[in-house]
Image (cartoon, rainbow, N blue to C red):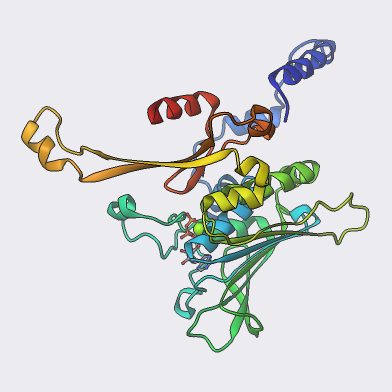
Length: 342
Ligand SMILES: Nc1ncnc2c1ncn2[C@@H]1O[C@H](COP(=O)(O)OP(=O)(O)OP(=O)(O)O)[C@@H](O)[C@H]1O
Ligand SMILES: [Mg+2]
């Protein structure tokens, strides 16, 4: 990761090249003409395609969306396979509920979901997904998308091939147990800039994907996570290491299997639960009535007193979750959270 200092140095080095050019680059005439076009609605397909690029921004977001779908399907085992760092194919296999036959026509259609009924039900949604956009967006940016699925009601698994719009183009019986396997082949084949960026950042993205699985793994101890790398294209660099987190009893066991016993022995799990008031605090009667309505629970795995900072701070890993959802937080957010916990 680049530090601010490294970044500053990089910017400084670029300056002379910028000066050499002399005057500011002028926008090309064709761009100006575009800017002066009358306002018009974009074609439906263009809108869908642009939106997919917002949902699926890099290879790690494909993995994130598919892993979240697997967790929403109550899987206890999730295997991620990256072929050529995911540039040739990304496969996520789970042993969750599978997709019922009656849902399959809609499964990858835009804004089609089994997780949200109406805007009002947003408050009570417990699943990771609910927008009904992920599979559709993955189809839009992949050369080929395949889904194999089987529920406990099905005699055999079925393999579906989907086109860029998320429609099923073929269906056949397949071997496989209960669960779902999604494969996205050649992601970003149709967005050259994203594809080039994905190629350039392939090793970094592979470690980002491992971090992502660690983040979900830590909050789902009972789920087994596997990351497998295979290489198909000749000329690729050294293959990254595979990674496995078995299903374990609790979070502390998770820390042990992921980061090792030495670190786990220096950490402890704390849990605080506090009722908070949803009533009007200026109205004592309402305040009293609403107390205990809801409770906030804070679970934390923190260093114990006397732990070795060299071991505890190694790698600078901080994982924060809200409702089991990993979130990115800055150091200042973390300080604020800790002061709240104190
Ligand atoms: N691994 C899976 N196991 C079982 N059902 C799945 C799986 N993946 C997708 N589905 C079904 O397909 C639907 C569409 O999935 P998709 O990820 O596109 O949308 P979503 O999860 O509902 O919302 P979001 O776009 O926010 O992720 C889901 O609502 C779910 O019913
Ligand atoms: Mg989803």
